[in-house]
Length: 402
View (tube, rainbow, N blue to C red):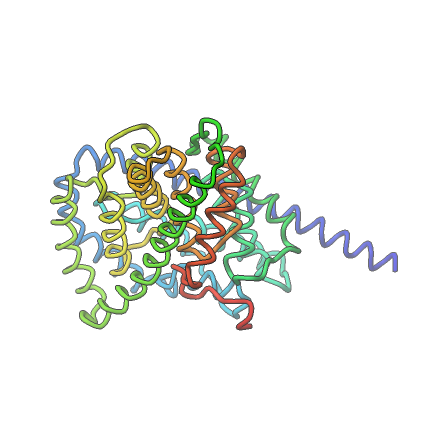
C-alpha cells in the first residue's frame, strides 16, 4: 500500500513538473508568435494596397508548402482533436513552424483569420512531444494540458483556457482529473507571455446592469441573436469548405482564384477594415469608435470565405470581433448600454460557435471583470443551449455518442 501511494505521489509530482515545462515552453513560443503578428499587422495596415495584391500567390505558397512538406499538418485542429480524443496519431513537430509562419504570411497580406488555432496547435504539439519524452501511457493528457497552455499564453486568460481545453474535445464530458496540471500549465504560459511583453486585451465594464424584467427580456433576445450568429458561422464554414472543394477540386487553384476575388472585396469594403484579426473592430466597439451596422456581417462572411479556401490561423478572434460589433448594433436598436452588450456578444458568439459553455463565461470574467458574472452565465447558457451542437471544430464529439 505504501509503495502504491508513493508511486502515485511520484507520478502526480512528475506530471506537475512536466506541466510547468509545457507552460513555459508554450508561453515563450506564443510570445514570439504574438509579438511578430502584432508588428506584421501594423506593417500591413500601413501598406495595405500593395500587400493585399499578394493574397493569392502567398495563399498558394502556404498551401503548397503544407502539402509538400507538412505531412498531416494541413488537418490542423482536426488532427489535434483526433489526438486529444485518444486517437493513435502523432502530431509532427514541424506543425509549430509551419502554422506559425503560415499564419504570419496570411496576416501580412490581409487574410481575415484568427490566431487561436495556431496557439492551440502549438500547445498540443509541445504537450504531445513532452508526453513522448516522458514515455507517458496516456498521451491525450499532455495534449489537453498543451492546448490550455497555448490558449492561455496567447490570450492570457488561464482559467478560461483551462476549461476550454477540458470541455471542447468532447461536449458533455470534462477531463476533471486534469484540472490541476492543466491550470498549472495555463498559468505558467500566461505569466510567461506577460513577463515577455505580450499584452492582454481587457476592458473592465463600468459597474453592472440594474436588473428589471424588461432588461431580462431584451437580454434573452440578444442571447438568441448571439447563438444564431455562432451557430450559422459554424454551419456556413462547413458548407463553404464543401462547396469550394466541390467547385474547384485542386486546392492550389482554389485558393489562388478565390483569393483574387477576396483581394477585391477587402479593398472595396473600407480598404482593409475586415482584414486580419478584427482587433480594430473590437477596440472600436469598446472605445466608442465608429461601428457600422453591417460590420459584424461583413467580418462574418469574409472570415468564412478566407478560412474555407485553406488559409491557416483560426476563428476565435474574428468571432470575438463579430460578437462585439453585433452587440453594438443590437444595443443601439434595443436601447441597451453598448459596452455591456458588446461584451456579452464577444463571449457568447464564441461560445456558440465552439459549442462550449464554461470557457466563454470565464473569458467574460477574466477580460471584462467578475462583477457581471451572473449576466455572463445567463447569456452564455442561452447561447449554448440554442446552438444545436454545431461547432467550428469538425472533430468535436458528443459524450452521448461515445
